[in-house]
Every structure is written in structure tokens, then in C-alpha cells.
Image (cartoon, rainbow, N blue to C red):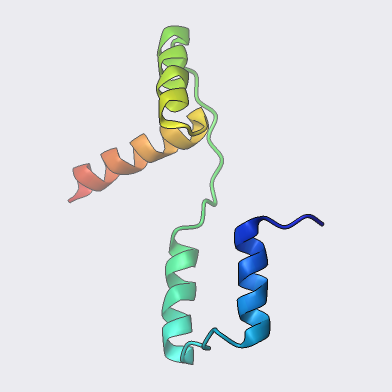
Length: 83
């Protein structure tokens, strides 16, 4: 398996013991946060073709996938609407 430069550096740091283990309480907090952010639902959506093409163009400019962009937009809308 070919590793990136960053992955190689992480392996070297691990081997050298340059990382500390987090206290269990802090690890639990991070685990709970990760679970709360998990994507656990599937959505099928029909939208206008021009809107989809527009979203794809925006995604290209932002260097992301259009599905990711749609998810980010929905998340932001819900966050602002609920607050």
C-alpha cells in the first residue's frame, strides 16, 4: 500500500512515540460527537435539471462533490432554521 507524505509522517511519529493517549473521559466526548455527526439516513430527491446542473457547477468551483454540497446546504438551512 502506498502512503502519502502525511501518512508516512504520522507513521514515523507513532513509531517515535510522539502522540499521547487522551484521557478516557475526553475520548468518550469525542466518540459521542462523532456518533452525533454520523450520516444514518438515505434520501432520494427529484429536482429540476437546471438546478442540479447549477449545483454541480458550484461544487466544481468549490472542489467538492455535488452530493456533499447539497448535504452542506441542507445542514446549514436546518441549523439556521432551528436556532
